[in-house]
Image (cartoon, rainbow, N blue to C red; front, side, top):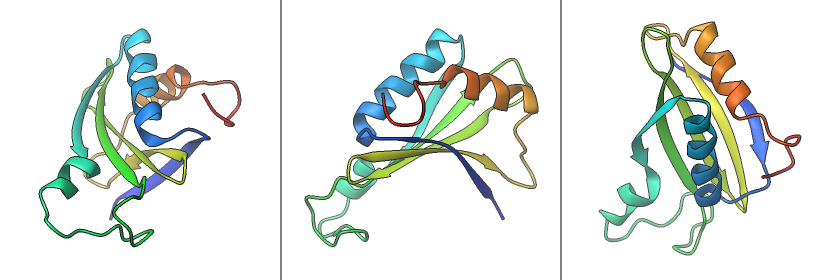
Length: 118
């Protein structure tokens, strides 16, 4: 079973948070590869109301990034948000644990002015 460790909460919608996170990771010389986007996945379905709000006008978003550092394998980062907020989490799975070096590098790259917003 995978374990999500949320380490940052932003007062910023998901689309803006994603752009900023990718920029900050790139500035820190970390490579992020996006592997999932909830908005794209939902567009493939004709009638897919938001499970959080029950409307098609919701702002729910989930994006999965594989973040490559100097460590052996990538760390999995999840951005999940709704109602103008975004939570950023690292994923730990028994078969794939991010290295402590990768965790520190990602958290350092994403340091923002508190956790209030970007």
